[in-house]
Length: 192
Image (cartoon, rainbow, N blue to C red; front, side):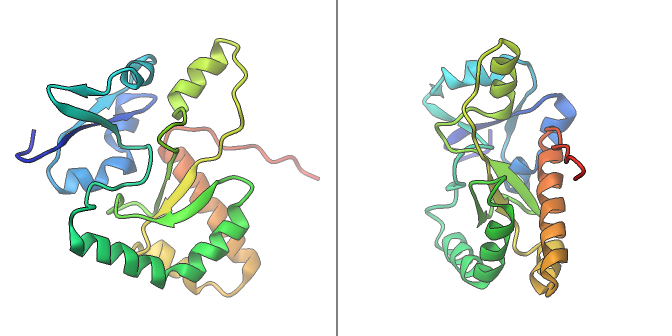
């Protein structure tokens, strides 16, 4: 582990390749942090029962807000500036995507990807939901939060889009891309 690393980070995915390419670990990878790549069906269940190992907390990279740089004033300031600068973009995206996501917010979690999906700290991740559904359990409706990299060229282009219909289509495509990056399936739209 990297010197000074306070937590043991992990990401759970359907397979090793999806875990390795997860947008959730981009910032950690850029900082040289080690991340456990978990792809077994029971890994998320197991990790939900472990709080720490060897005095270090275990953190799911795809859950909750990214607060790893909370002590870093530069990062905090950069995130606040990004939030102010992208206020109108976030409002527009939330309006368009409100049926599919709980919210849209900027993040420092991403370095190369335009967007990713996260769930609240207390909610089940995608892999755990799949296990429960396969066991015949009814799962409560849950919407992920979409986190966006406001410095990504796609988001900058989207912010400049004046045509609202085109904006809505592009925002939906961006959300679908985030679902695919997680290894989730896309929704199927019925023709009317």
